[in-house]
Image (cartoon, rainbow, N blue to C red):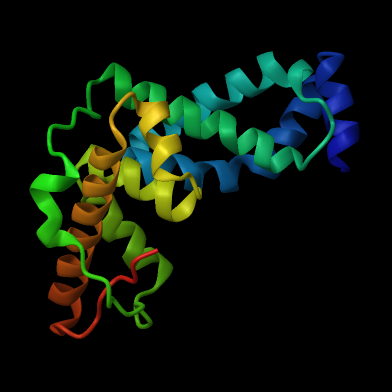
Length: 185
């Protein structure tokens, strides 16, 4: 069914429209939640919370722009609020203290499947995983991340650099190669 028809149905409180919207977007939003949560059980909880928010805030969707992008923002914010609540986003290092992590000639990972990358990402500490997701996957700038997480921009940069380094080490451990590196964005 068309998104606009589903949205109109949800605005009327039609349970079939809500179910249709859920079924259409649940797989995509579960992927978003999994990237932030690190485990399936928490991701399921975040997805449920995200859909509750989506349905209660659907009247604020203006109709301009892609609905999936609007919905995705709700799920990212749901995950970030959970991480803030659990104090998983505490950071202490400034970029000046970790300048050695900046490697400008990183090459792309070509042999890593999406599932293997998700597994490696799920093993990152919450803060590293959050910033890696926001910067490398969601496309936030470090300034936007800093504002959203109430940290300084240098901290965002250093946490991203550390996440990249940890992912690189995990990939090297999987493939036994020091030539595979995560490309700096």
